[in-house]
Image 1: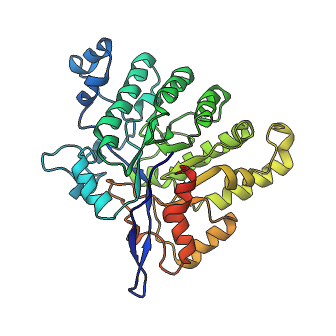
Image 2 (image 1 turned 30 degrees about the horizontal axis):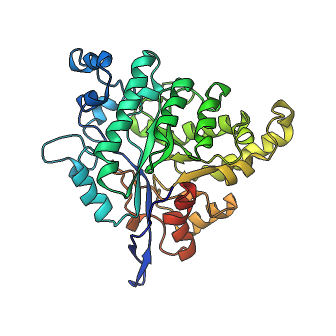
Image 3 (image 1 turned 180 degrees about the vertical axis):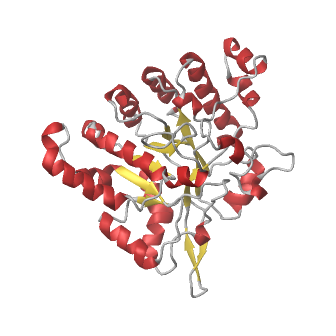
Amino acid sequence: MSIQNDVNIVGELSSGTKRQTKIIDTDVHHEIRSTKDLLPYLPDQWKRYIAEYGWVPERAIPFNQIRKNTKYRMDSIPEDGATPGSNFQLLKEQLLDKHEMTHAVLTGWFYEATVAKGWYEFAVARASAYNDYTVEHWLEKDKRLLGSITIPRDPQAAVREIDRMAAHPQMAQVMLPIGDFAWGDPYFHPIFEAANRHGLPIAMHLSASITAQGGDFLRYYVAWRSLHPQAYMTQTISLITNGVFDKFPDLKVALVEGGFEWVPFMMHRMDSAYKALRQETPWVKRMPSDYFRDNLRFTTQPWDDLTAKEFLNIIDMMGSEDMIMYASDYPHWDFDPPERTLPQQIPDSLRQKIFFENARNFYRL
């Protein structure tokens, strides 16, 4: 991918002095105003399901009706009352220009085509329509924006969509939303093969269809949110134990908006289990922690206000400075601006890696 990185971000140190740093935001949620935005990109046979039958995505979070007007920054709601994240000019003003982003990776929120449990032909059409909409209404408006290829759940159709969209110079990755199934299952390996063949990394992001790992028994949103890392742990273990990175050693996967504090714990726990039980998965040729360092990346969001000592201890336990990338989660309520992410007392070289270099390498910019 040959995209120029020529925008500098001005960061401010605790001393008040200025320094130049670049920033790549790896998690920006752009939205459609309504499903009718997809109509120009849908085959005629599917248009009636939206235009006449009023189809809308099903979002299965039990708290979603309460949260539908509270999950966004209030200032991100456009003047016309449209969905936050659906207005390019406002996103440009509040994110790209205000924080002088070098690049911002659009991760969307229209994941239902991938996690759909039926009506797969319609889901295939919706995924393609959403990708075409993203190109015309977002990527073509600003070269700082990078896109994520939305795919249907069916592997064969997903491969066709990856092959169709991969040549676009601003499509930077393939998006796999986390639902109630494990992506490491060999059934899905053709998707990883296609991404790897095109030199594209994979991103995984929590979707609205995920319930609590182990059962849908939670009563409160705060409880559901606290369990987010559990869903990411499940997918990470699935990828490694099913041999995804042994089949595709050059493949990179980012776990977006799942935090990173849990990573050293899981590296240690998987290594311990592997030493005792490696005969069960003989196709896994390396220690699990090696795959974490070489193939997996994680994002700062949600930033949990760690002290410099706590943060550096986590980096030390990971054994690598290359595994974490900055993410803002714009326009959601827990948006993390770069000025309030990372402790001021960490080395500038590490700050530069997290804000820019690690993502630049991940996306092969």
